[in-house]
Each structure stands twice: as C-alpha cells, then as structure tokens.
Image 1 (tube, rainbow, N blue to C red):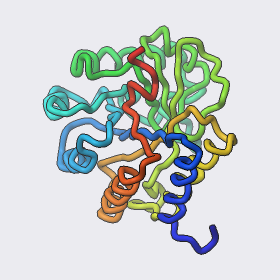
Image 2: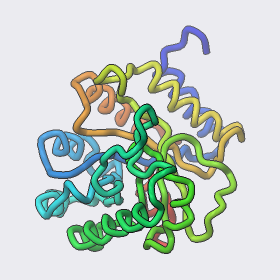
Image 3: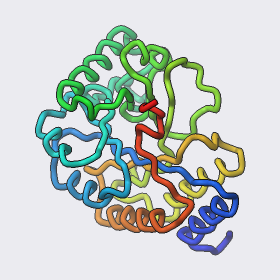
Image 4: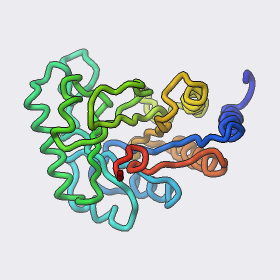
Length: 255
C-alpha cells in the first residue's frame, strides 16, 4: 500500500473485513475528565448519538456539575485513578500507582475513588478501572475484583490470556495526541496505528475479540485534532464493516 493515502488504507482495511463477512468492532474512551466545560461539550456534540462514549473521570476532580452535564446523554463513566498525581520516582515513567507504591495505600485510594464516583454518578458508573497514564502496578491488577471492578482498560493490545478471574481487559490502541510536542500527532501516524491494529486482529496477530479502542483527551485537543476526529468519525460511520460498541457491550458488563 505504498503511496496510498492513509484514509484509503483505512477504507481498504475495512473493505477486507466486509469481504470476510466480519465486523470491525470499535469503542471510544476519553480520559482525564473532571468538571464540565467547552471542550467536553465539543466532544459530546462531535460524537452525538452515533458513538457511545466511555468517560474516564478523575474522582478528586469531579462533582455533581459533571453528573448534571451528562444527565441528558448516554455517556458511561469509568474510574480514572483517584487524583491523577504522578507518584513515580524521579526519572520513572509517570504513574499514580507505580510498582514501588505501598500496595494497601494504592488499594485504599482506588476503592475511595470508586465510592466517590458511585455517589456522584450512580448507575452511570461502570465497574471499570482506567489507571492514569495507562500504568498500574502488577500487584494491583488481581486486587481489582475485590475492590468492586469487573473491567480494566489500559493502552496497547491486550495479552490473549488474561490471568485474573472476574476481570475483563479491553484496551485502547489509537492515541492522536502528540504528548511530547502538544496538539495533534498527525493523520498518517494515527491512521496507521488504527489500520495496524485492525489488520493485526483480522490476520490473527492480535486478539480478534478485543475491539479497537480510540483514546482521546478532550482538554488537550487543538483545532487540527478536532478536525481529524470529525473526519475519522465520518469515515468509520460511513463504512458498513465498522461497528461501534458501548463500553457495557465491549466489556460484557451487562451480562
């Protein structure tokens, strides 16, 4: 596909799913939510009723104003850490729950976050944990079910065999934010990551049952990124093989 535009590559990949009689399942997660505002309003308007949204909310930043803003929508909420503070050692990759953090302290804070969001959002809250920066100490993963969670979402293709009973992992795979430079990463690398995961699923090189996840951070979008997301939604909505899943369906949380 050398020389082919990245949008054409996406169309070709979706055509291959359709030719095989398969659905290219997708889901959308947006991170770092706290209070309502213009950027969140813009995301909700962009996705409309066509794309179900999982909003990862930071418990320490949220209050009833966000619940009121989401009341007329179908948006579902996940627990995004507790306060989104980096507790990694200097020089380490950012993490609220790094490997060397006290295990009991981490568990207590995760549970505290779930309880707080349950009080604010009630039935809108999913038993789904999204660790800030997509990093979580390995020892905390098997503790999530005892803390009231049935789902975990990070970044990158999941392992085919997930060892924790009672816990489903569905990750995101496409991040359009240029974290080291700010703004939009660019349509070619973002579309290549999308096509790459879809192709890996179709070809058996990645777990075919894990829906391809789009990750956004509404507060970090520049105009180029907003324009790209609008075009991406239009391209996916317009293809018969692309199928959006709600987070409940993606994680089988309604069964």
